[in-house]
Length: 210
Image 1: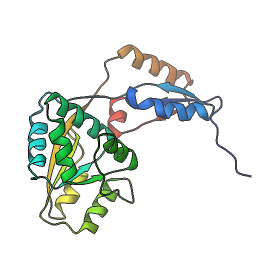
Image 2: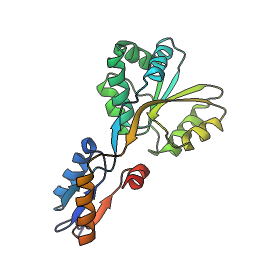
Image 3: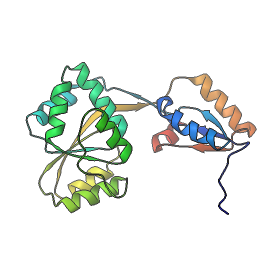
């Protein structure tokens, strides 16, 4: 007999950004647990959208043939910024001329929502999976564009450069520390009292911020 795991009587803290925590909270509650949302990270647009404008102009002019999206956040922020710049149509047209690679199905669904075709999805939903996909494509000396979080880790870029690819990273959003100090203080008190049984971290930045 297969037992269904349950979280009855357990309180699980979720440190993801508020707009992303609801899905995880629902899963916890469906298993009988109590979701405790404590955002340890927030997202914002960069102050300077010049790199975004340049990227859209280049992709619309077919100077960018390969684009990798590492998260749904990158897609959402890129299209919000294109709207602010009045370049939404150019962005859509440009992306649909390029070869698009998404790190996972959720990112692929977000692209689809904006009318963008997805060409490749890696077997493994990770940076390693992206690199494996690129290797199978047999690319060399191509420019790979990656709209992503500002100050992203260097692993993917370094591995792609090792394949003799030119990598252009476009910062389309930033990760910042939430400003609600009262909420953080309450979380520390609840954690110390033992009323929180587990913590879910969605990123290394969430760990550092907490």
